[in-house]
Length: 259
Image 1 (cartoon, rainbow, N blue to C red):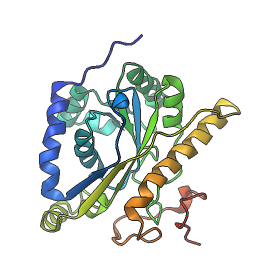
Image 2 (cartoon, rainbow, N blue to C red; image 1 turned 90 degrees about the vertical axis):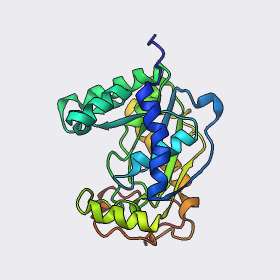
Image 3 (cartoon, one colour; image 1 turned 180 degrees about the vertical axis):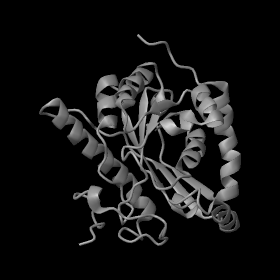
Image 4 (tube, rainbow, N blue to C red; image 1 turned 30 degrees about the vertical axis):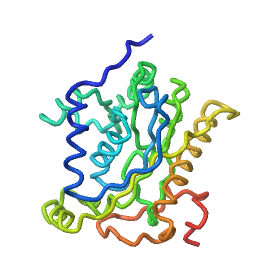
Protein backbone atom coordinates (compact mmCIF):
# COMPACT_ATOMS: atom_id res chain seq x y z
CA UNK A 1 0.00 0.00 0.00
CA UNK A 2 1.58 3.27 -1.13
CA UNK A 3 1.64 6.21 1.25
CA UNK A 4 -1.07 8.78 0.58
CA UNK A 5 0.30 11.53 -1.64
CA UNK A 6 0.07 15.10 -0.41
CA UNK A 7 0.12 18.03 -2.83
CA UNK A 8 3.39 19.99 -2.33
CA UNK A 9 3.01 23.60 -1.25
CA UNK A 10 4.96 24.78 -4.31
CA UNK A 11 2.52 23.12 -6.69
CA UNK A 12 -0.45 24.60 -4.84
CA UNK A 13 1.15 28.04 -5.15
CA UNK A 14 1.83 27.61 -8.88
CA UNK A 15 -1.73 26.47 -9.52
CA UNK A 16 -3.04 29.61 -7.81
CA UNK A 17 -0.55 31.75 -9.76
CA UNK A 18 -1.74 30.29 -13.06
CA UNK A 19 -5.20 31.72 -12.39
CA UNK A 20 -3.63 35.18 -12.27
CA UNK A 21 -1.42 34.75 -15.35
CA UNK A 22 -3.90 33.15 -17.76
CA UNK A 23 -6.34 36.12 -17.83
CA UNK A 24 -3.50 38.26 -19.20
CA UNK A 25 -3.35 35.98 -22.26
CA UNK A 26 -6.94 34.94 -22.89
CA UNK A 27 -10.48 34.70 -21.57
CA UNK A 28 -10.66 31.20 -20.11
CA UNK A 29 -14.05 29.49 -20.01
CA UNK A 30 -14.26 26.31 -17.92
CA UNK A 31 -17.27 24.01 -18.16
CA UNK A 32 -18.27 20.57 -16.96
CA UNK A 33 -17.72 19.31 -13.46
CA UNK A 34 -15.59 16.67 -11.77
CA UNK A 35 -17.57 14.82 -9.08
CA UNK A 36 -16.46 15.86 -5.59
CA UNK A 37 -15.70 12.25 -4.64
CA UNK A 38 -13.06 12.06 -7.41
CA UNK A 39 -11.30 15.41 -6.99
CA UNK A 40 -8.68 14.14 -4.55
CA UNK A 41 -7.91 10.97 -6.49
CA UNK A 42 -7.25 8.43 -7.58
CA UNK A 43 -8.25 9.91 -10.94
CA UNK A 44 -6.86 10.06 -14.48
CA UNK A 45 -7.52 13.21 -16.51
CA UNK A 46 -7.07 12.42 -20.22
CA UNK A 47 -6.73 15.61 -22.30
CA UNK A 48 -6.33 16.49 -25.96
CA UNK A 49 -3.14 18.38 -26.87
CA UNK A 50 -3.50 21.43 -29.12
CA UNK A 51 -0.72 23.93 -28.29
CA UNK A 52 2.50 24.31 -26.28
CA UNK A 53 0.52 26.56 -23.88
CA UNK A 54 -1.88 23.72 -22.93
CA UNK A 55 -0.27 22.88 -19.57
CA UNK A 56 -0.70 26.45 -18.31
CA UNK A 57 -4.35 26.53 -19.40
CA UNK A 58 -5.01 23.17 -17.78
CA UNK A 59 -3.35 24.33 -14.57
CA UNK A 60 -5.76 27.28 -14.33
CA UNK A 61 -8.78 25.17 -15.29
CA UNK A 62 -7.90 22.42 -12.82
CA UNK A 63 -7.31 24.97 -10.07
CA UNK A 64 -10.79 26.38 -10.68
CA UNK A 65 -12.21 22.86 -10.53
CA UNK A 66 -10.51 22.09 -7.22
CA UNK A 67 -7.97 19.70 -8.74
CA UNK A 68 -4.21 19.49 -8.25
CA UNK A 69 -3.08 17.02 -10.92
CA UNK A 70 0.36 15.56 -11.36
CA UNK A 71 1.37 15.96 -15.02
CA UNK A 72 3.04 13.20 -16.99
CA UNK A 73 5.70 15.16 -18.87
CA UNK A 74 8.60 14.57 -21.21
CA UNK A 75 12.01 13.91 -19.68
CA UNK A 76 13.43 17.04 -21.32
CA UNK A 77 11.61 19.24 -18.81
CA UNK A 78 13.10 17.28 -15.90
CA UNK A 79 16.61 17.66 -17.33
CA UNK A 80 16.42 21.48 -17.55
CA UNK A 81 18.32 23.14 -14.64
CA UNK A 82 15.47 25.21 -13.16
CA UNK A 83 12.39 23.60 -14.68
CA UNK A 84 13.61 20.14 -13.68
CA UNK A 85 13.92 21.09 -10.04
CA UNK A 86 10.43 22.59 -10.07
CA UNK A 87 8.93 19.54 -11.80
CA UNK A 88 10.44 17.18 -9.25
CA UNK A 89 9.47 19.39 -6.29
CA UNK A 90 5.88 19.49 -7.53
CA UNK A 91 5.68 15.72 -7.85
CA UNK A 92 5.19 15.46 -11.60
CA UNK A 93 5.89 12.22 -13.42
CA UNK A 94 8.71 11.78 -15.90
CA UNK A 95 8.31 10.04 -19.27
CA UNK A 96 11.57 9.14 -21.05
CA UNK A 97 10.19 8.80 -24.56
CA UNK A 98 12.20 6.87 -27.18
CA UNK A 99 14.51 5.38 -24.51
CA UNK A 100 14.74 2.08 -22.63
CA UNK A 101 13.49 3.90 -19.52
CA UNK A 102 10.08 4.74 -21.04
CA UNK A 103 8.64 1.51 -19.61
CA UNK A 104 9.22 2.86 -16.09
CA UNK A 105 6.66 5.62 -16.56
CA UNK A 106 3.64 3.29 -16.48
CA UNK A 107 4.28 1.58 -13.12
CA UNK A 108 5.31 4.94 -11.62
CA UNK A 109 2.02 6.50 -12.72
CA UNK A 110 0.01 3.50 -11.48
CA UNK A 111 1.76 3.76 -8.10
CA UNK A 112 0.97 7.48 -7.97
CA UNK A 113 -2.69 6.71 -8.62
CA UNK A 114 -2.80 4.02 -5.96
CA UNK A 115 -1.42 6.63 -3.56
CA UNK A 116 -4.45 8.82 -4.26
CA UNK A 117 -3.05 11.19 -6.89
CA UNK A 118 -4.84 12.89 -9.74
CA UNK A 119 -2.70 12.29 -12.85
CA UNK A 120 -3.09 14.33 -16.04
CA UNK A 121 -1.89 12.78 -19.28
CA UNK A 122 -2.15 13.42 -23.02
CA UNK A 123 -3.18 10.09 -24.63
CA UNK A 124 -1.98 11.29 -28.04
CA UNK A 125 1.57 11.55 -26.67
CA UNK A 126 2.25 14.75 -28.62
CA UNK A 127 0.54 17.90 -29.86
CA UNK A 128 -2.03 16.45 -32.22
CA UNK A 129 -1.43 16.91 -35.94
CA UNK A 130 -4.81 15.79 -37.27
CA UNK A 131 -5.50 18.26 -40.13
CA UNK A 132 -8.97 19.00 -38.71
CA UNK A 133 -7.63 19.26 -35.14
CA UNK A 134 -9.58 16.34 -33.69
CA UNK A 135 -7.83 13.97 -31.28
CA UNK A 136 -5.53 11.48 -32.99
CA UNK A 137 -5.31 7.77 -32.29
CA UNK A 138 -3.98 7.48 -28.75
CA UNK A 139 -1.23 5.48 -27.10
CA UNK A 140 -2.32 2.62 -24.82
CA UNK A 141 -0.51 3.92 -21.73
CA UNK A 142 -3.58 5.65 -20.24
CA UNK A 143 -5.69 2.51 -20.57
CA UNK A 144 -2.97 0.41 -18.97
CA UNK A 145 -2.63 2.91 -16.10
CA UNK A 146 -6.36 2.65 -15.48
CA UNK A 147 -6.25 -1.15 -15.58
CA UNK A 148 -3.29 -1.37 -13.17
CA UNK A 149 -4.63 1.16 -10.66
CA UNK A 150 -8.40 0.88 -10.97
CA UNK A 151 -8.59 4.68 -11.25
CA UNK A 152 -11.50 6.23 -13.20
CA UNK A 153 -10.79 8.25 -16.35
CA UNK A 154 -12.34 11.65 -17.08
CA UNK A 155 -11.84 13.22 -20.53
CA UNK A 156 -10.74 16.85 -20.71
CA UNK A 157 -11.18 18.83 -23.92
CA UNK A 158 -9.60 22.19 -24.69
CA UNK A 159 -10.11 24.40 -27.70
CA UNK A 160 -8.53 27.52 -29.20
CA UNK A 161 -5.33 27.29 -27.16
CA UNK A 162 -3.63 27.33 -30.59
CA UNK A 163 -4.82 30.94 -30.87
CA UNK A 164 -2.76 31.77 -27.77
CA UNK A 165 0.49 30.06 -28.77
CA UNK A 166 1.13 28.30 -32.10
CA UNK A 167 2.71 24.92 -32.65
CA UNK A 168 6.09 26.41 -33.66
CA UNK A 169 6.71 28.12 -30.30
CA UNK A 170 9.19 29.13 -28.96
CA UNK A 171 9.96 30.35 -32.50
CA UNK A 172 8.26 33.73 -32.80
CA UNK A 173 7.32 33.62 -29.12
CA UNK A 174 7.52 37.37 -28.45
CA UNK A 175 5.31 38.29 -31.40
CA UNK A 176 2.78 35.56 -30.56
CA UNK A 177 2.47 36.68 -26.95
CA UNK A 178 2.12 40.36 -27.86
CA UNK A 179 -0.63 39.52 -30.35
CA UNK A 180 -2.38 37.29 -27.82
CA UNK A 181 -2.25 39.88 -25.04
CA UNK A 182 -3.77 42.41 -27.41
CA UNK A 183 -6.56 40.11 -28.66
CA UNK A 184 -7.17 37.98 -25.55
CA UNK A 185 -8.97 35.17 -27.40
CA UNK A 186 -11.58 33.00 -25.70
CA UNK A 187 -10.20 29.58 -24.72
CA UNK A 188 -12.40 26.71 -23.58
CA UNK A 189 -11.64 23.80 -21.23
CA UNK A 190 -14.36 21.25 -20.58
CA UNK A 191 -14.42 18.32 -18.14
CA UNK A 192 -16.43 15.42 -19.51
CA UNK A 193 -18.26 12.46 -18.05
CA UNK A 194 -16.25 9.52 -16.62
CA UNK A 195 -15.47 6.95 -19.33
CA UNK A 196 -16.83 3.43 -18.92
CA UNK A 197 -13.98 0.95 -19.37
CA UNK A 198 -15.47 -2.19 -17.81
CA UNK A 199 -16.70 -5.22 -19.69
CA UNK A 200 -13.90 -5.31 -22.27
CA UNK A 201 -12.98 -8.74 -23.59
CA UNK A 202 -10.02 -10.28 -25.38
CA UNK A 203 -6.34 -10.37 -24.61
CA UNK A 204 -4.72 -7.77 -22.38
CA UNK A 205 -3.39 -5.97 -25.43
CA UNK A 206 -6.75 -6.02 -27.22
CA UNK A 207 -8.49 -4.66 -24.12
CA UNK A 208 -5.92 -1.85 -23.87
CA UNK A 209 -6.49 -0.91 -27.51
CA UNK A 210 -10.28 -0.89 -27.14
CA UNK A 211 -10.05 1.11 -23.92
CA UNK A 212 -7.73 3.60 -25.64
CA UNK A 213 -10.24 4.04 -28.46
CA UNK A 214 -12.95 4.66 -25.86
CA UNK A 215 -10.86 7.23 -24.03
CA UNK A 216 -9.99 9.19 -27.18
CA UNK A 217 -13.60 9.03 -28.35
CA UNK A 218 -14.64 10.39 -24.93
CA UNK A 219 -12.29 13.34 -25.42
CA UNK A 220 -13.74 13.94 -28.91
CA UNK A 221 -17.32 13.88 -27.55
CA UNK A 222 -16.31 16.38 -24.87
CA UNK A 223 -14.61 18.57 -27.47
CA UNK A 224 -17.52 18.63 -29.95
CA UNK A 225 -19.69 21.20 -28.05
CA UNK A 226 -16.71 23.56 -27.83
CA UNK A 227 -16.39 23.72 -31.61
CA UNK A 228 -19.95 22.99 -32.74
CA UNK A 229 -19.86 25.60 -35.53
CA UNK A 230 -16.45 24.44 -36.80
CA UNK A 231 -16.75 20.65 -36.75
CA UNK A 232 -14.73 20.22 -39.93
CA UNK A 233 -12.33 23.10 -40.59
CA UNK A 234 -11.31 25.22 -37.57
CA UNK A 235 -11.98 28.94 -37.86
CA UNK A 236 -8.42 29.71 -36.77
CA UNK A 237 -5.69 27.89 -38.72
CA UNK A 238 -2.26 27.53 -37.15
CA UNK A 239 -0.03 27.79 -40.21
CA UNK A 240 3.02 26.58 -38.27
CA UNK A 241 1.40 23.22 -37.51
CA UNK A 242 2.41 20.43 -39.96
CA UNK A 243 -0.64 18.24 -40.75
CA UNK A 244 -0.10 14.49 -40.41
CA UNK A 245 -2.62 11.95 -41.72
CA UNK A 246 -0.82 8.92 -40.27
CA UNK A 247 -2.74 8.89 -36.98
CA UNK A 248 -6.13 10.28 -38.06
CA UNK A 249 -8.92 8.28 -36.42
CA UNK A 250 -11.39 6.62 -38.79
CA UNK A 251 -14.33 6.68 -36.36
CA UNK A 252 -14.18 10.38 -35.61
CA UNK A 253 -17.04 12.32 -34.03
CA UNK A 254 -20.10 12.59 -36.28
CA UNK A 255 -19.94 15.50 -38.67
CA UNK A 256 -16.14 15.77 -38.67
CA UNK A 257 -15.27 13.48 -41.57
CA UNK A 258 -13.30 15.25 -44.29
CA UNK A 259 -14.75 12.93 -46.95
